[in-house]
Image: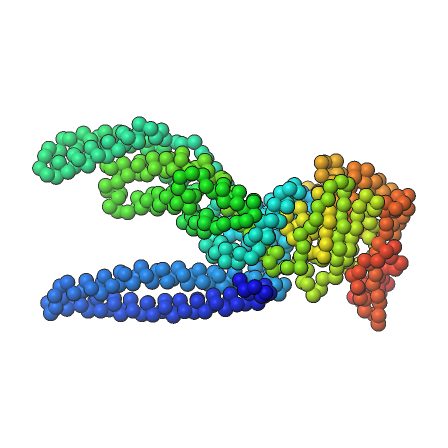
Length: 594
């Protein structure tokens, strides 16, 4: 990385270099293809001359055949390099798209992590196309995606968050490392629970004694076959084959189970070995990253070589379909020996598989946050404070909105001011403010940088009621769904971590009187448990609940301006209660006569 280059300039330079490499390899690929075609034609012609016309020596066709074989191996390596160069191109093309706010839908949306019951996931757009995970995730393994999603969904302790900050700072300038991880694991979709669960399963075959018996039987069959072929009696071979058949039949079901389960659980092992091989020699300064490297050092062979060995065993399992092995494999207990080798690997290395993959997943998740930090150098790490609930955000912006469209606001909540009631017209920015506060808190509690000039907060658990809908399947109205969500948020307020509540159009589904009484009771319940939060409303009656709370609550609002029939918004937060509504103007603007 060139010192002083902006992220955009660095990405453009690297993209140009990767495109040049890809074009060069493409030319090489075409040239090798043509040469191989010429060699194939030459070999055919020489074979005709040697064996049909008897015009040349019979060994001459071997020369182009040997050269063809050598070129085939070299050509395959060129194709692999070309694929890697093209994958590297996509890495920087996607990076430039993120910098230019064209990233929505280019990454992994994380749809499988969506949970309507989660206290803020759906409300803050964490997952789905254009969601936070889509923006952040550079992980290529399932375990990496799982780790990042878990961090976004579950607030971490402050000590762990600070360790992640150090790790992100360590990884941020390592563009080559992040590129290599992305390129090596581009198509890797293993590393999930199935492989780990398989690796940790108890052995299905007793290895001690039984493995030695299998080896002796195979040797006996081989020796008897050689003796018979040399002119000896057939009886020893028949006897040895009978013992092998009985032994094989005794273990048949367990051997098939071991081999089949290994094939099912161990997909993508070669790429996983490559990823581990890239990580193992890296030297980090951040303590948490150094600890992850130490977790990969489990004694004996490095994890990359251990995984490569298992991959080789899986390839040998696949080779049983070879015609020759179908004939000679059963008498020599080929599949049984493979099953023993798999069980031996599982007994030796399987116990470490979880910590290996957890380390890979955490490094990928940290690399994702490091890439985000590199691409957004103005985003800052939050500061954490002990004591009562606190949120002091200066010039907060929403990370999912394009920078040119983002209007920033400051929000301060603390022991002396626990509640803000936000009023304003339709489309003026009330819901966006709640999401801005919430998504930055989620980022902060995940250990990521935040879209703000400064953010100081205490450890907070977010509880949001922004995107609550009715359910036809469960027969629940929107009002019932909302009060159910509010009950869950109250449970969070009673927990060990202080609550930050974000309530959009609180109790909108009931009459004004019940809404006023219910809203004040709910908010007071949250505040009594030490929570802080924001509530938006169109109903100006709700703004009155700040009065009995004195300086502990305040009204703020968003304004709009009507000029020549066009409504405009400045999206800036102002003190006090909004003094007008644009509902009638909006209805008239779209042609409703009211």
